[in-house]
Amino acid sequence: MSRPFAPKVVTANHLLDGDVIYLAANDNWVRDLEDADVLYDEADAQLRLLLAQSQPQVVVGAYLVDVTPGRSGPQPTHFREDFRRTGPSNYAHGKQEAQSDV
Image (cartoon, rainbow, N blue to C red; front, side, top):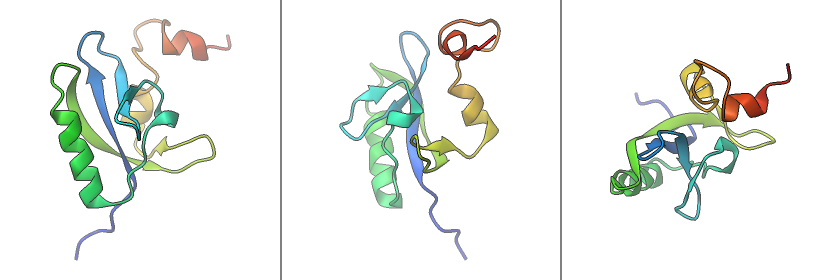
């Protein structure tokens, strides 16, 4: 018996700067998970993943990520994806610097 399809988003890394990016509903890449297109249909998710993988001049390592819909947009269900969206962790810069309240 197969598991029910969980909502997903397409993610990858930007080829030139390595930042984590997400596929939006308009087929553009966005840097905030909240702006990503949430996919509720497995066939649609596979087509969107193929679209992402057909853009090697823009992205590398495209794959599908499980998410749960939230008030401020999709939220990752796995720690790895939550960690990825905050950017590099070796020092505060970029996304981590913007999120720092200390």
